[in-house]
Structure formats: structure tokens, C-alpha cells
Length: 149
Image (cartoon, rainbow, N blue to C red; front, side, top):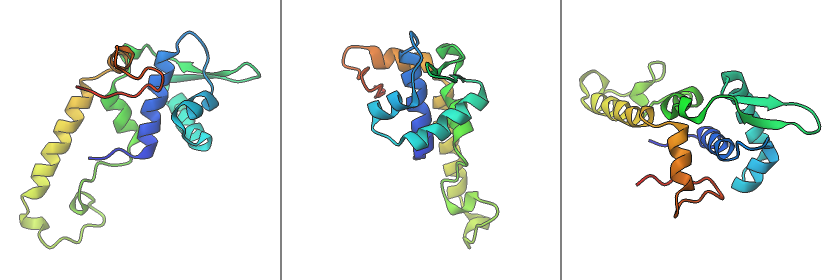
């Protein structure tokens, strides 16, 4: 399973904000650290604001910060909110399946179970855990990159 760039940017934004709680951050700060488009991040931050996870402060000295505590932000919920679907194969989309094997295919059930297991792992992780992992020695707190071991 692969996350969309949108979800990747959403997670990077949350991790960055969680690691820089002592100040307001700007979209430009996050874009510069990760080398990603400021325009893409504007869409991400807008949706994070609507979701209630991020507070945006307008004005000359404005920026953004987490509105919720990191331990209250569940990664599974974030991924579900930011992904458009979890169609691992064509047959998952009820509107466009043309697979002739669909009526007797066992693969769909296996893929459905795999997706459920994937989401279950994400449901067991909070933003606080990702931040703690990133800040450990050997972590990349400068770029908030998470490598789970």
C-alpha cells in the first residue's frame, strides 16, 4: 500500500508542528525543511485547520501550530481522513470494476484483510510516538523523518 503525496505532506506537517511546539511555524518553514511545494502545503494546512488538528493564526506574525495534543492525534485517523480511498485493486471500486474474476476471486478478501491490518497498525500509533521516535539519537529530528524499527 502506498500513501498519496497529500497524506505524506499531512503527516510531515503534523510531525514538524509537533516537534516545534514552542513557536508558530509557517508553511514556508515546512516547505523549506522538506523541499516540497508551498502551494501543496497550503491545501494540506487548510484541511488540517478544518479538521481541528491545527490552528492557523493570520497576520504579519501569524503561522500555525497544533491545536490538539500530539497524544490525541491518531495516525490511523489522519490517514483515513487524508486518503481518498483504499482501493488496492480495481475490484475494490464498485463503480469501475471490470474484472471477470470478481464473482469468484479470493484475492479481494486477502487484500481487504491486508488493508485492515495496515490500518490497525496505524491506529495503534499517535503523533506523540512519532515525535518521540524522531527525536531519539539516530532519528532525524532536523527533517522529522520517521523510520520505524
